[in-house]
Length: 72
Image 1 (cartoon, rainbow, N blue to C red):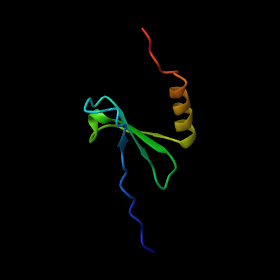
Image 2 (cartoon, helix red, strand yellow):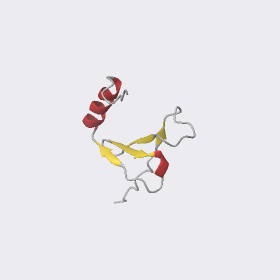
Image 3 (cartoon, rainbow, N blue to C red):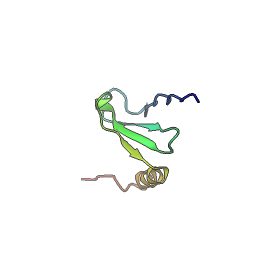
Image 4 (tube, rainbow, N blue to C red):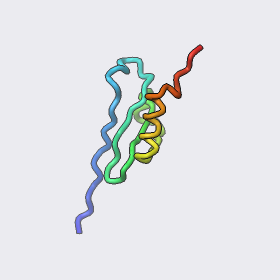
C-alpha cells in the first residue's frame, strides 16, 4: 500500500488585510475536517489554532452578530 502525502495547507487572507499584516489567515484542513487559523504577521513561526467545523461556524456567527466589536 502506498502512503499518501498530505497536501500542503493553503492559507488564505482577506483582500481587505492589505499590507498591514494585522490580520488572520485561515486554511481548510484535509482530510481531517476543520479550519486552521493563524496570525499573518508571523507566517512561518505562528502557532495555529485548529477548529472543528462546528466551532468555526459558531465563531463566524458571533463575528457576524458583532459579538467581538469593541466600541469606545
